[in-house]
Amino acid sequence: MRKVKRLLRYTAIFEEAPEGGYVVRIPTLGCVTEGETFEEAKAMAQDAIRCYCASLLKHGEPIPEEGPSEVISTLSVPITVPSR
Picture (spheres, rainbow, N blue to C red):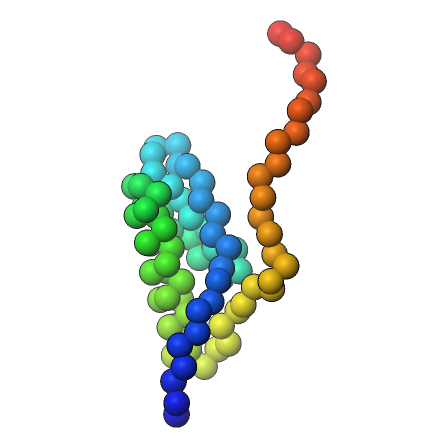
């Protein structure tokens, strides 16, 4: 069987953890990981994706892919609230 390398893209959501560092979620795959720094969290997320996809392949399962139209954005909305 011929093997082909593919570059897959997944949305990763980085959230600052209250105790420090970052928690990263990859919603399409259901993966969650963390790191002390943003760079470490990113590397851990990439490793989680690789390991999860390798497990799927080993068990003959398809690798989920995101559609090209998926976008996550931060929105700023001004809201007037009563003062205390």
